[in-house]
Image (cartoon, rainbow, N blue to C red; front, side):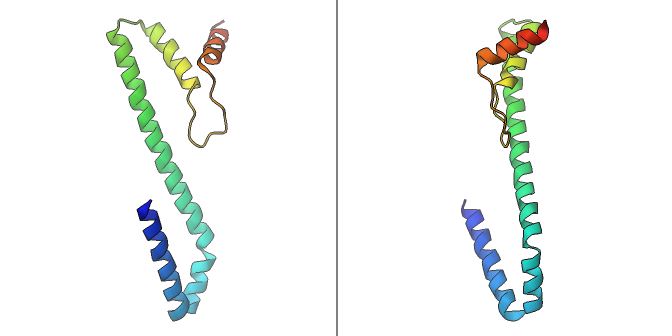
Length: 112
């Protein structure tokens, strides 16, 4: 959070410096602020999604290895993972995750 605040202060001071020293560059800076904001948001969103994907991959790998250690079959592991995925809430998604029972019921219906 501190970095964001410091970055904001730096942008504001640069903007003020431009306004005082180079009015044409200041006008261009202000004209491009929406583009810069969109790029910043896109970069941050991509970073969050990538981190979440890495975390979920690691959790899935751990679940699979733990289930294999317990002697579960591939079919049982696949079923568990398919249900588990439906219960996840992904960042930025508008979809509501299913409860475990709902996901299990949906999985059984898909199997038929």
